[in-house]
Length: 281
Image 1: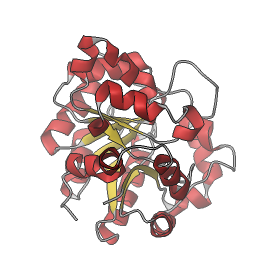
Image 2 (image 1 turned 45 degrees about the vertical axis):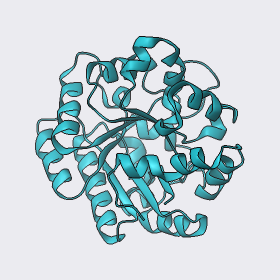
Image 3 (image 1 turned 90 degrees about the vertical axis):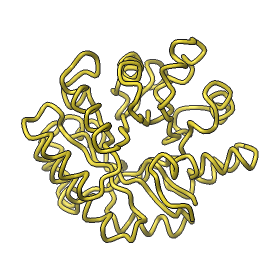
């Protein structure tokens, strides 16, 4: 089973009315002002999956600052997943500082959400360190068996739209404070796995996974070997960041790295299948 653990789809209203949402949300504006920053619907994701030979995709929402926009996007994800015959796995988004967040989370879980993401604490206006928002997210993960997918970005390196992300110290502190929570640290965790050379950090990463979304934009292909050495191949999830990067391209890049068959099998889908508790093919 090949699983893309990091894709994005948007409701048609957002795709067709991009300018309105650029005005409404600063985080969305930072990433999607450029027309080259593609927006895709569920139908386009399914067509991409067919072309690339991908069985299942995790479809993430966007970390809107407005709770109502999170609800609108999450409802679309849940509807798309229900119509996909199991090919789309919904990761909803919430504004954890909102008054109705717990009700939203209960409803999403009842309708089949398997995770929350892509969460963007900085854009949404909260911290993951000693905050009520962090407590709510950890509670939801435990109560409803949800994985939490956080947007992470590197403190160094080239600047790009969306670079502003979750500081590595915040994601590191969150996984240490909530060791039972399954966390997916997107984009190789903004470099977090490299801190696994510190014993206390490695111990804290017991339930932390790192997705490969946008690898070609960020790292040399040696990143696979280095992270496998530091945290193990069982902690790495294939992700494309579709439609920013085509699923075909991302899968081809993974297969050109030169991994052994077992490592590739785990990263291409088996790790995600076990994390999301999907049935074996």
